[in-house]
Image (cartoon, rainbow, N blue to C red; front, top):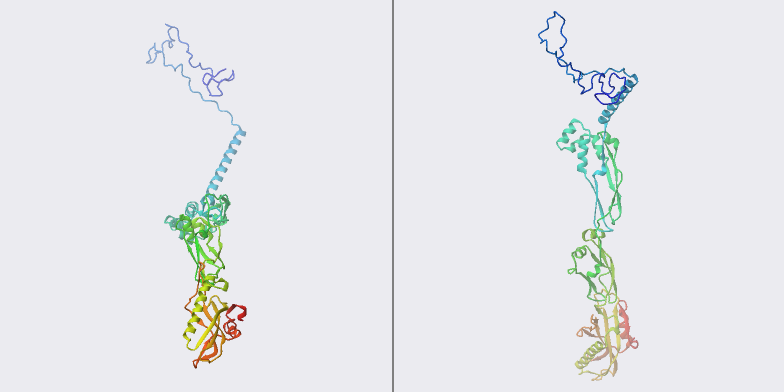
Length: 471
């Protein structure tokens, strides 16, 4: 059958609906109760009984035939097995609630150190820098928020006096002081490299203020490094030699005025040094080295030196002549002409007493100073002439005399032209040929004596080169 109230199917013999508790046998909702026939006289009270105030014809008040009086469902007997289960579940829930309360009360806030860590990269590819940034300010704020502190420390925190907390609370100091972090590599990085941040902490110390730390090693990939610009510093270096070989000096100048700003910045940090800067002879090779702090240079300008040494040859410089053959033929003729003029002038001055015939060029002595850094003459040139000298008053017989005319410091300019001070000459030697009471003819009557005085006596300081027959 169907329950007239909830419309659910129930057993036919049911007196109550097992779903809604409605008592069965009551007319279905919407069913009209039977009414008395029209004109039918309602039942009267017993004869002689005086009816109450109610009109005899009035039908006594009736319960609304459409309203079903509320019925109370019958109580079922308690299932002890189910009751036990309910009690057990309730007990377990109570225990769980107690555990949750205890966990909440004893829970330690976990502070993940990775949350405060950031690594930034700067510089240039291959020479990049990694900077570890740890948000210490937020780290301390979180410790203040989640840590457990006594009343005095809480007051200090409210007043912004964290240093007092660290100084007064050993537990807090230890918890914070044991936290550390470091990068495994922070220099000479390239794009695509990986750096790792590792953490150290002491959770035994942290637990004493109600917190714990976590933090596994965190990796960061290097990116964003700029491209390095390679420059050759010698492109901007001008090398020149001054003075006279073999005692020339080197001079260097740097000019980057026409280059871009990065090159100008880079060259400000570059220094140059020569392996020797003085006592330089023509033909010497000088090695110049460019120095710079590579890392600092890259940080400041983004440039790297692609060459750090270069060799220069001293070729365009004035020089003291080191060999007789280096005197150009034209200029040697000029020197000889001067020497001959000196000889002619000498005999002209002494013509009242002596006379010279057959003046002839016999050869030379050429000496080179062994010390390139000398204050003495760098070279000595003696042009040796011979003449037959006779005395007009018969003081001595006709004799062959060797007359050296000496010049010093013969040079050859960078353009190839030779030079010597032609006014700085000296007639060398003195013979025993006497005239005019006390005068003696200048020069030597023997070549060995001349060689000994002009060459052999100077061997300690000079290297010799001479005409063989004049030794």
